[in-house]
Image (cartoon, rainbow, N blue to C red; front, side, top):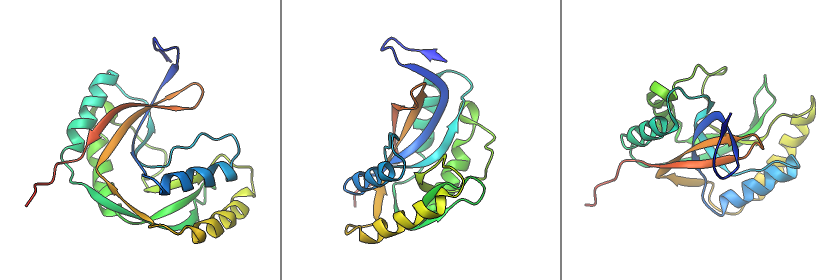
Length: 186
């Protein structure tokens, strides 16, 4: 555990995420709180799932920034509500953008950011996790109903990633913003 001057006890647990913009983020955060009371959501798509890092936080953050600059901005389109069979996590699938996320994940899982993950990388948006057995099917139905009522676009641009760190309170602290490659103006 790392203790920081602001008093937050931080863990050696980091991730790289693409935050989802409004109004989609507010809808997804509200849905997640409805499904799992007490959770502290901040809607995102994970590029590097939670992991310990080797080396310093500064080295890992600088590497994430450097690698992000190799990828152009892109758009994610969100698909349907699904359930991971082994973990029973309820999530929204990604309909478009997976072809960008997979190579980004592979390229960034190196150096101090490298980690052997317990499951193959599968881009998604988590809605409910750490559930009691049998809860996932019922919660997936709630999510499907709410998702069908969402009246705004179900897609968003990804132009930056954020390197984050977990705390003992299971909240995530933003450390470094990582900008994707600038697109030349024509």
